[in-house]
Amino acid sequence: MAGSIPAHINSIAIPIVENQTAEFGMSESVTENLIAKFNEENILRVTDEDQATSILRGTITKVTDAPYTFTKEEAVTEYRFTVHMKVEWYDVREDKVLIKKNFSGWGAYGLSGDISSDGIDNDNDGLIDGDDNNEYGDPREFATTAAVTKIAEDVLNEIMTSW
Image (cartoon, rainbow, N blue to C red):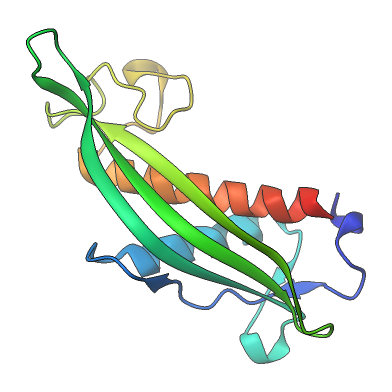
């Protein structure tokens, strides 16, 4: 698939993502996840902006943290943390935007305080609790990580499949 990216694009810069929300630490978390995903897949070399043949710019436009599921007595059993982000992939040599698209990702968490036994598929991977080896830690923090990881995966997939 990497062969379908324009031949002159062999690197990507990922400057710190802009955060237009009040959610602390989102810029760093999303940027780190994007860089990690690109390094992991090794499709484009991640480099500084002044050396890159393409630039990926992102803006977090909205974060929601809202009740998602309820009991029949209308008590909240699950929250969904969702991150919305605007992304633009820019071709430096051709001086044009290759992709401009909105993405969103989410993670779920309950009120129990222990995501390893809350009965929720916290990262939407089809696995729950004991069957999911990465469900541990602070519930809301895990949901945040799941949301930004999903965005990073979707952005990478969009770049790979758009060309």
